[in-house]
Length: 151
Image 1 (cartoon, one colour):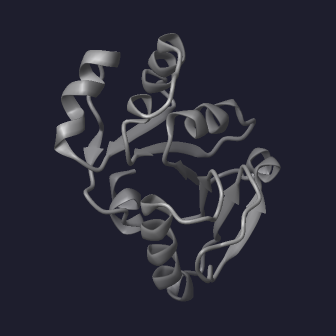
Image 2: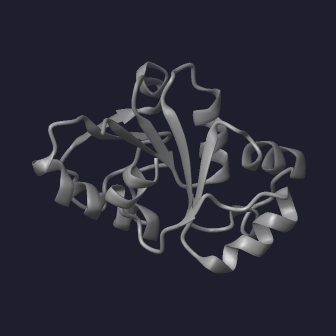
């Protein structure tokens, strides 16, 4: 399945490590497009075996799936002018680590165009209290195959 993973940058974080590792394993066996888009420039912490585009390429990524891992990035992909499916793989509860407006978080989490996946069953209750929505799935470790099968 044609897939773009939108990340803040290519420097190290736990989500990037999981996503890059999974992509590097799958990219050689796929006939479909599989790439990353970054919102900031940074030196990659490890080798990435696929294309890495800047965020302005998200608008032209049509007929595929765009996956991201933060509330802020989800807001950006929801604003993009394309017909791709949008997925938020909520790796961490962002609002616990940085200041965010409640209205913004609520509108993103309750957007009907966004598939919401979390990595922990412990995230269900905080998400439900914040947005009155439950995740569409729980996938404990980033796995493109599981995400594709969910869609």
